[in-house]
Length: 276
Image (cartoon, rainbow, N blue to C red; front, side):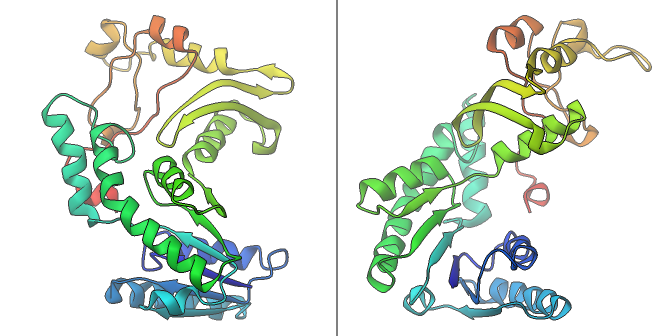
């Protein structure tokens, strides 16, 4: 089986290679083709992949190419994970909405729309090339905004496509860790868009534990020195890590009415280092 990665020079590719190595007994991948237009990034990831393959006894072959037709030929699965416009485009997408008092995010709001407008034509063209070179291949879209991109591919006539996002399972792992239960013993009632999702219930042992989580968010922390000004105003924190730099107001009544807890990360606008 041949697996092709569009955007193979991206930072997530080594994680993918590691996962494929771990799953090799159950996933018969023979060749992984890394395709990218950035030759420097592609060479760096290829070197990392080579080191990982050497340590694991070379369970499959990794090939690199800058030719899309060559990358798609004979593929069974094509993973798309690209960022049209690079990090520079993302900074603009996120900072312009913030300037006008609107949420700056790469998948939702004006920033997500701008990213979609740049990305959809590129992905539609790649999908057409996949259909010509490997008509039976499945496209697994991991390119943001994942929902809009996948919808656009389907609308353009691509029937063998699946959109994925790692935010829901990542949130599930964090909730399981907070509750002290195994990830496999937790069931989430989750809906929404990627990067704009909501958990309506968190079932563990036949009990919805979400009220417990919301209660923990709605309670002020034990004061170490003096209470946070935002806590004195009745706000729950969005992020507890010092690096987040600020808190977003979430009154306890709002949390209870939404039956959800806020995401616990926030990036400082323009800080490229935190995005890499």
